[in-house]
Length: 323
Length: 86
Length: 115
Length: 116
Image 1 (cartoon, rainbow over the protein chains, first blue to last red):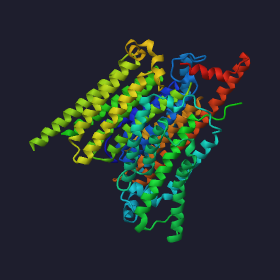
Image 2: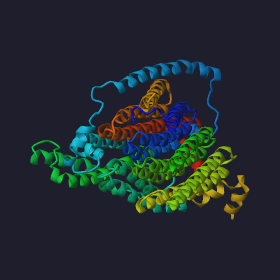
Image 3: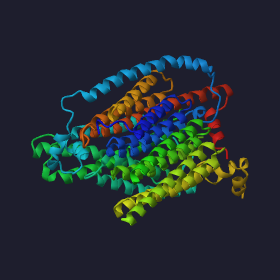
Image 4: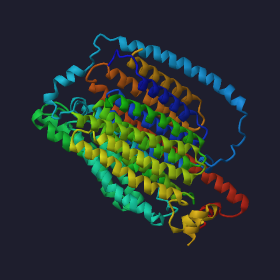
């Protein structure tokens, strides 16, 4: 598709993405900025699908509009009240023209930076002696991959080092988030005070989301889908369960920790197993690769889902209240 | 014959997404902005479903499914945070 | 051959009608004056729009599995938007007290909640 | 202009806007959004360059998936830290208010919100 002239839908989509990014970055209220950013996520999901990246579109739909949205909306709702969206007077609001004058250098800098980067990127399309990239190499080795979907093969076989480190990054994020938690502060309203409709809805929707997560996970071996997307959907299900008062509460601490650790641990076991059996760190025997990858992805999805949920719940758990 | 129709519908749905932005930026309350998110979610899901047929990529149906399912999680996050905060 | 053409025309009509309902819902969301009327525009027009688009696409789906998955998108959206709209029209995610506390501002709902 | 060139310009615009906003914004939440938008811009560069071949290159797609997960991880940490900072500010404000009124401010503020 490289040399096709740009189509109407592409032009509209590009303009829309830049415009919505502009409003997300310059909205005056926090909630407006956050919600604009969520709209940007939806547009980006469509954009990825236009560029032939359905995996990325699925991940953007699951993570960009689901978990990230829940995180941002939760943080803004719990934030200081004057930014919650009510038309409260801003302290010492600037005169409009002053704002414009202040924004002028910023806008100029943005235009210059964008023009420079754009020129560089547009040059990059034409540069490079091998525009084929790594497509040929990956597709040529698919028979040894154990899965039929190239992106899953890259993620969990050919470049699994990246994925291992990524899961570790997520683990570190959970550690640093839980480090800010002190003793649990009593909630202002326990889950029992929530509307019965909300609780009922969460109870009904959570199992459906678990089913969707399982489907996305299993789809990953021969079509777009996989551990990350599945983990994000699972996180949505766990957030709903916690809202209904069913979630992995403080009583399930040990279970929660086990679920967090099992993914990275299984990955390390597989990596070390490669060292023992194949003589190389993270190497997978093609005969075993399919089963190992599916099992590993299942555990990873569990860990990723629980990790994202813990980060979300940490927003609502206050730190130690001062004596 | 159906191809151009689907492309046209995709453009219309994309314009609808932009129109939602008026409510998102206008507010006035957080819940009004959230309505913008909900409508954006289902419009985006419809757009992905249309693209899945017009471009013949079945995985986009999964994306539409996931987007519909998780749009309500954002709303639930807002409602529970409102309940818990004074 | 002619049956296939008929199916395509029907599908196109359904999808275009769905896009029309989406547009009506979006315009309603932008133009209507307060939260509850906006909810009304959102849920009704939006569900009908998604439903018609999905029905139109189901005719083009090709396989039963694809058709069922498209229908699942709609079946998932309907209860979600109904319940979320109901919850957002009440005072808060709060229990029985939440709805009554907000009652007086809006005659129709407030009367029902007060009883 | 080809489709890919157009999207590279879009990516450049996203990066330019977001980087400048990241440097100028005062609200930490807006800075987090700016980092996210800048991340989306760079992911768009990768996906666009992957689309040069048919079928698209799977390696950048895998990198982009990794990038999305890393983004949500640091966004979560940033938001939790932001909440902690704001909570500390709230508590400090409540304390000074309580000292001024000669009454425990914490209780008054919480009870007020839960009234009904």
